[in-house]
Amino acid sequence: MIRKVLVANRGEIAVRVMRTCREMGIISVAVYSDADRTSLHVRYADEAHYIGPSPSNESYLVIDKIIAAAKKSKADAIHPGYGFLSENAAFSERCKKEGIIFIGPSADSISTMGDKISARKTISKAGVPVVPGTKEPLSGEEEAKKVIKKIGLPVMIKASAGGGGKGMRLVKNEKDIVSSYRAARSEAKAAFGNDAVYVEKYIASPHHIEFQILADMHGNTIHLFERECSVQRRHQKVIEETPSPLMTPKVRQEMGKHAVAAAKACGYYGAGTIEFIVDDKLNYYFLEMNTRLQVEHPITERVVGIDLVREQINIANGLKLTYKQKDLSQNGHAIECRIYAEDPDNNFMPSPGVIQHITEPLGFGVRHDGYVYEGFKIPIYYDPLISKLIVWGKTRDEAIARMKRALHSYKITGVKTSIKFLEKIMNCPDFIEGNYNTHFIEKNKSFLEEKDICKGDCKAIAIIAAFIDYHNRIEKAQQNISTGNTSSSWKLSSRKKSMFKI
Image (cartoon, rainbow, N blue to C red):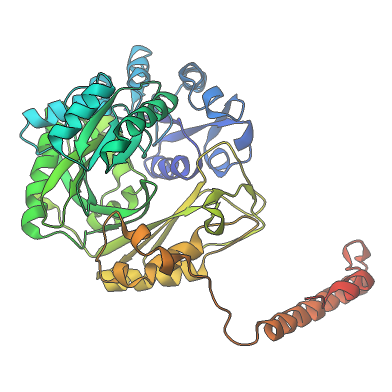
């Protein structure tokens, strides 16, 4: 049985995995780069090991360093989290060769489903509907034009080894075929080291819906229902919710069966996600499979009541699933907002820097998965996701109201964040009505980018606030003087000159 787990990741997902390990009585091991020496996951773990310089390709992505840390710490198993090496078949195989349990699927499953073309072939054989398109990589520009003419515009040119919106181009006009083909290949090569691309028919008004699955090593596979992930920016998810406001009981049952069939088709075990694209008429098609834990897994945990990391560890231990499909149901409604250190007013550019103050939202039905704290410096080397805010309500309306409250009380200073942008989404009529697809942000751009107008006399309010702060500081300085603590006394003279320059 697993007694010690090395988490081959960082940030909030590393902390999240370690929390379940602690509940299970499992020792957790952190790995860290130069930039993460003071990160919360390093502090939270039972022990930590240094793995190299800040750039991920010199630390978190170096298999030899991760394996060396696992051996040095005598860890029984490695949990990859998401991102980095989580969907790297060579890493899964290397763990197996080294006698270390990989808390995830086999290398064969990762390879089969990680390549989009291979996945389409496998899924089609299992009877799962796929988007019309090619099942082989395009051989060149002439074939691209020929295939696209046959399928009909608009189409998507996609990287076979892709994900996260990279190596993807929407083609609406014939004149753009060649340039889009070249751009997709170039981006795919830079991002994945593989420039193979294929073509899919573009689905108008698409909804991005995914099904969480769990499968053990004994042939048992279940799904834990759907997540609606259509609020996206640049093909990256921003907000997720479950149940989906689009779904009907009949379609949910059909899609769930196909999700299970897809997982079984590649001999899958562990936690994974089958992603579908759905049109407004509820026709659905297989999009891809993520052979790992998803960023948005907490909303499924909250609605279904199952700890997915615990289940991953149990499956890796060779245990059978203790749940059957008929035992599972959705209870209430959950929403997740991804909090990024980025500036919505500057084209969402990353905003690294030092966290000066943070007030995390609390209260009934609120979960906060984060890793930053006051004084922590957000590094420039990694994804700017700093936390995930998850709420639950008995109904969707209650969950939206709770998310509004939670976002309102979530305060971070020192860096720009996406909190205000997320608040606007929660107040957008289309979102409130559940009337949205992957074009939501583009469609509601004017509403979401509208600047907040200060109501009332802002200058007067600012002067009053400064005046109160001024007197609070005087009182504190006088207290320090009276107690003999003059070293920290406030220098009143310098402050008086600048206090009211507003």
